[in-house]
Amino acid sequence: MNNSVKSTSEPTLTDKFQRGNVLASGCPSRGVLQDVTSRWGVLVLFALLRGTHRFSELRKSITGVSEKMLSQTLHALEADGFVLRTAHPVIPPHVDYSLTESGREVAKRVEELVNWIEVNINPILNARDKYTQRYR
Amino acid sequence: MNNSVKSTSEPTLTDKFQRGNVLASGCPSRGVLQDVTSRWGVLVLFALLRGTHRFSELRKSITGVSEKMLSQTLHALEADGFVLRTAHPVIPPHVDYSLTESGREVAKRVEELVNWIEVNINPILNARDKYTQRYR
DNA sequence: GTGTGTACTTTCTTTTGGTAAGTATGGGCG
DNA sequence: CGCCCATACTTACCAAAAGAAAGTACACAC
Image (cartoon, rainbow over all chains, first blue to last red; front, side, top):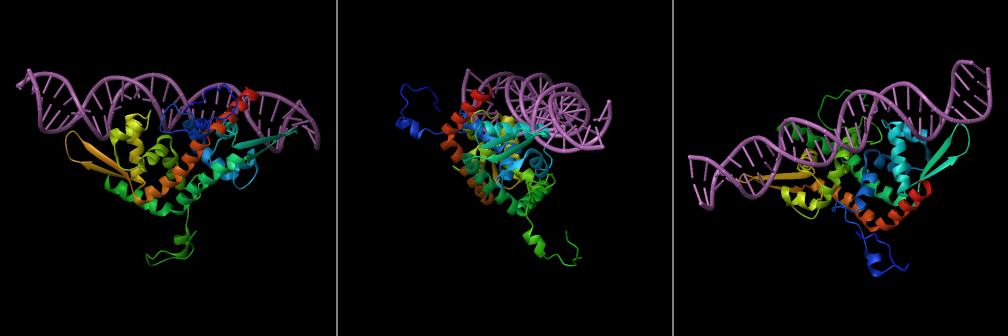
């Protein structure tokens, strides 16, 4: 991946056709992929697809997430431009989280994956049971 | 969940419409989701979508993965029924890995996500740069 | 001055991940 | 015969990440 500075500000042909390659360890797209597919990142994107939520709401709907990890995950997704953080200057604090345009794009794809797994969970679990029975 | 006592082994209506809920911490679908979206799981599925590969080939194409993690990841995906392991009884060992039918289904969805990120990597990185400049 | 509510942050412990070395097997080579 | 090679794993050890729980900040109510 070439992210070097250009002498002109016009996008060149190679710029336009440049894309990442997650199979290459140096490519920054792998970092973004990790933010998106991280344990809690997936669930945050999935949850925010249903609309704006505040911190405490996310914490309640995503069962099992700690405040530390939720905070960390939201920051990473915000830095990548997927999540918009809106802090209202009141006390006690009130902060809203929503998806950006690009956030909705990734989240839609995450949702497709999550939905497929949720729908097919039973056959998958059966396969897993058979596997563990066969090979201990 | 099921209030009526059943004397037969026929699947009930509720059985048929049962699906997972990844937002619930107890739901096993969350475990499957983690296998699929794990750091190396995503890349293995993505790589295997291009066809059958042996262990050493995967290790080469997925830059940066250790033998331990590749082995571990392949086992998890095999247990979930996404990956088929075929060991030829020769020496030195020769083992092939390919996707099962359900493996192709998840992998296709993973691919959609990966492709979107690879294509849009540049705007994302720009957003990230702006973010780090603003908030250090 | 004590308690409440929200969104974090910090500290400490546990779990997970990475690195490197070891294991099993038989065939080729000197 | 002794030694090395190739391949697909395991194992042992240490570093990094995640989880649990407590602390912080602020204004207002009592």
